[in-house]
Image 1 (spheres, rainbow over the protein chains, first blue to last red):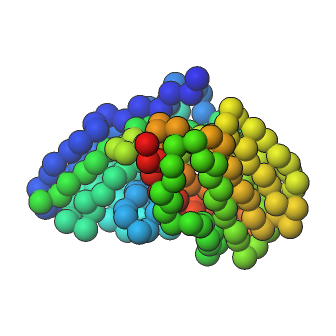
Image 2 (image 1 turned 90 degrees about the vertical axis):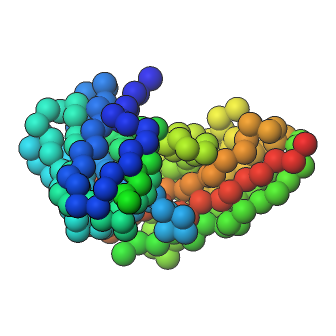
Length: 113
Length: 114
């Protein structure tokens, strides 16, 4: 089974803090994704990566950056957290470019106060 | 961008009843996926569909890729309490900007009453 893990289930941070969310997959998947999920807005893609050190912006990249130094690990960085970044953050991975099945981690519930 | 219309937004059903939900798109999709999300958890992939007209089952769940390629349906037979959750459709359009991006529906919240 595909296993996608996220470093924290719950995080509480203060406005202005730098926040790191880590995601690891154990199935040698090429593609990794970061989404945020908000009530009434569904899942929105922040960034994705199709290879080590490669990244592409999703639909809502503002206020976020990402890092992929190793194939299995994809980090989401909030450079200066703001209250409107309070959300559920979901990481996903998929095997290859043509494989559209994405497998999700359990999510990180981030609260910025 | 792409949009998926998922309906209904919520459903309250009695245990043992069958459930149907669907997603429609304004453009053609070449992949349809159905996910279930339990409270506080990440979505779990239930069924993947890759061909127009395809009908695929996973236990009590059956999903179909519409022949117009603009819709998909998920049916759950003989619902049980653990079916409670949010069901999402997701799709991939050949006209989308990236080969890797999916478009997600807004979800159907299912409540099963004993």
